[in-house]
Amino acid sequence: MQNFIYEDKRRVVEIRRGTSLECKAHLHAHLELVYMLRGTGCATLDSKEYCFGPGEALLVFPNQVHSYRRLGEEQYLISIFPPDLCPEYQGVLLGKLPLDPIVRDGQENGIILTALRRILELSHVEEPYLHERVKGYFLILLGEMLLRMQLTDVRRADNDTLRTVLRYCQENYNRDLTLSSISAALHLNRYYISHLFSQKLHMSFCDYIAALRVSKACEVLRTGEASITEVAYLAGFNSPRSFNRVFLRQTGVSPRAYRRGELSRTETFAVPVDKSEYKEV
Image (cartoon, rainbow, N blue to C red; front, side, top):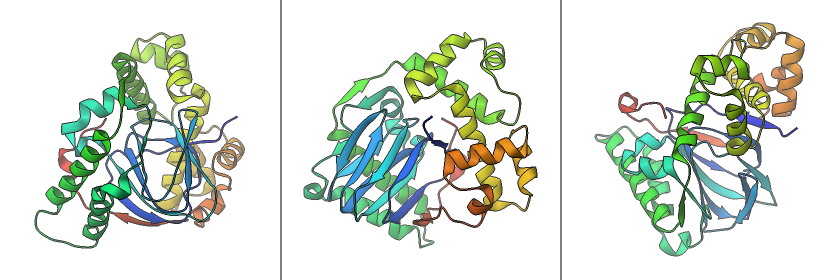
């Protein structure tokens, strides 16, 4: 079974400087932009691998399953941000996908790296019009990236349905979720739901729910004082034993090891933004 991590990051804008991009397959409702400063990174998007080197940038669209593997020494900038930060591009981001997610002329262009560095600098200041300036740099980033990509249409109806199903799962992850219960709640054919997970996320419904629950458990482990047993039930698992088994399979460490911070590998900066105008995607 493919290891998978679900990240629920709808309302946070992040910029990171890192030296180890490698991670297991995951997805989230945000865009993810990686600019390689040194070394070579390899990303797998929807089961296809792409490698990119210094001066090249990768753009992951919302709800694309993606993972990274390390080939050697790396240095990169990564930004994770919601599509509705830049509503001007939302129709493109939710209705199309790039044939190649890599921008190959990023170093010659220079604008992409400059915008990323400016956002990183702004993460350390408190100045007037900060939100507007951050949004402006993201508009520039997306404009430069999308201009250099060949985009193709995706089935909008399927995407809308998948987002509805994912939102329902996110809101009810600690209940007894099955294809039959979701089918009844959303008035959708259970076989169609299963097909969407297989075709769009390249994983089974059960694997997705397990990953989602592990993600929710990670949030509690990072921020709360609940015991491991309490975390297991809060996340929707029916026993601490199954929780520990699934958590280890998904993350590679035990819940206790995760709480000690053994998965932290990058320096992370949260950019302050005006969250009031965002809506769920």
